[in-house]
Each structure stands twice: as C-alpha cells, then as structure tokens.
Image (cartoon, helix red, strand yellow):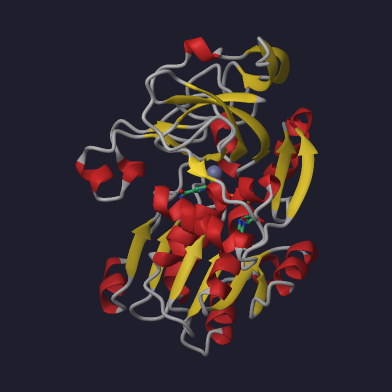
Length: 354
Ligand code: 8ID
Ligand code: ZN
C-alpha cells in the first residue's frame, strides 16, 4: 500500500535547478525509527522561507540536496516501532517548520521549542513537505482537528502560527492600533485576520490593488500602499495620521523586504513594540539609541510558535475567524510559484496539491 517511490520537489544546491523527482525514494515502515512517522502529505503551503532556503539567503545554510516545504497537511500512514504517541495510522497531522526538538532543555521546557539547540527544521535541516510521503517526528506533529479542510490547515502551520504568536508578543490590547507590514502576503493576510479577531485596529501596508481588495474583505481598518507614499518621510506621516496622529501601538513586520523595519521605528507610538518576523537577507535594524530610549520602544524577534501555539492557530480556522486566501496549484508548479513570489505577486498563500 505504501509505494517504494513517489513525487518530490528537490534541489541539489542553492540557486540550482529545482526538479520534480517522480521516483523519489519513500521511507518504508520498517525503516522508521521510534518517534518517527511517515505522513502522506495531501497539501503543502509555499512560504517565502522556502524561497529564501533555495536562494541560500541566510547565514545558516540549508542541507543539500533538500526537499523543501514546512506547511504540510496530511495523514499518518506508518509509525516507527516502539513509538510512544497519541497518534494512530490515519490521524490527520500537520508538518510545521519546527520538525523536532529535545523537549528537555531550558528552551523546550519553557515552551520556546524553536530555540532548542537540537531543533530540526522541516524543509531546511531535514526534508520537508514538498513531497507525497514525508518522514516527520511524532512529538512535533500538529493534530489537525475535524472542521478544517486540509488545504486550509496547510498555511496555518507556518504562516498562521507565526503571526498568531507574533501578535501575542506585540504588547497590545483590544482597541489598540497595529500595523501589519507585508499585509497582503502569506503571513500578512493571516496576521490581519488574527489581529482583527483579537479586537485590534489594523492598518495593513503592502502594494497593489489585489492586496488592497483582499484586506478590505477582512475588515482591516486601513490599507496603505507603500508605493503611493514613497517620498522621504511620507509613509511615516501617513501611518501616524491613520493611527490617531500618534502612530500605532505595535508594528508586526511580515514583509520579505528590509525597508519596512526602519520605517516602523519612526512611526511607532511611544512605548510601541516592533515585532520582527520577516527575514530579508543581510538586513539590519538601525535603531537610534536616543529615540529608542526617549520613546521607550521595544524591539522583539518572533520566531514561529510552539506546539500549543499551532493548536491555537488552527482553532481560529475551525471557528471561521481566520480564512486563508488560497490559490491551489500542483507540486509541478513550484518554479513558477517562486518566480511570482520573488516579484511580490502572490496575494495570500499558494498551496500545492501533492
Ligand atoms: O518565524 C518567523 N519569523 C517566520 C516564519 C515564516 C516566515 C518568518 N517568515 C518570513 C519569511 O521568510 C519571509 O521573509 O516572513 C517573510 C514573509 O513570508 P511570506 O508571508 O511567506 O512572504 P510573501 O507571501 O512573499 O509576502 C511578503 C509580502 O511583503 C510585501 C510583499 O508585497 C508581499 O506581499 N512587502 C515587501 I517584499 N516589501 C514591503 C515593504 N517595504 C512589503 N510590504 C510592505 N512594505
Ligand atoms: Zn514558513
């Protein structure tokens, strides 16, 4: 019933050819170790992180050859002998960025599993979800509840959990203004919805009419097209203006470009929080020490979420509070998806059928 080979998207080196291998070896049940599961992936989201991985954008390189992908939704088809788990063959599960961690170190015990020094990362340090059959780790698989379709669950497993966690770290209360920069992208469009569900007043920053229309449909209070406010200081003035003159209480930067960070430090209200999420290559945050102190600003890095954050993030989708904007394509389409993503041409999330 489990085939010997199946489809997988593979590259051998960063920036090298990305091929769809129709005969990629599938791990057989007898080869699984205790703690491992074989997941038949049904849908996988494409995160900008996958594109950064292929381009080798970051100071820590991915393993090569690599099967990317870390927003996988599917069912367990085999469990390694001797595993201690609540899951069964047939359980619906999600593969997220954090594939595994030790669960015993200070970080893990404190619920900060992403910073475990033994963390394994799906589609980066271990093969991920851009394939029909993926090996993953039972302790970190996310249970996918009934009441959410697999293709809807997929983008929640990275984009959703990441922004849910980021907003929880934004030090805001209902009624506060929050800017979501990169608001029309995969992470951003979900951030707008989580923030709205939490009673925040949302200002989305991105560019283009597709993204403007998308955000309007979620009841975002304001959309600012950054290309229409490109002169010196113009975007900053506009953000302050739409946030009651004083600027937002927080800015969650989900943009894949660097400019958004330094603008945020200028438009934040005193005591405001900058939540750093987007990971543009070679970027620095240039915080002026005097104004950081004088305005009592906070700068917080936010890195995915823990197992509980993933469960909470999915629950918003089950309750219909968060609905990913999906375009469903096929694993074979990966190259054209990356081309569009590179140009900022994806409103919402692209999910691939495996
Ligand atoms: O744990 C984390 N911190 C985490 C988790 C997942 C993803 C971080 N990320 C990172 C990704 O690696 C990537 O760098 O978040 C970033 C966004 O991922 P994404 O949402 O998957 O990317 P996208 O769908 O391409 O959306 C990016 C949006 O940013 C806009 C684009 O128009 C696009 O809609 N954007 C850009 I590029 N420059 C902008 C700017 N200056 C901007 N929006 C506002 N201002
Ligand atoms: Zn991701």
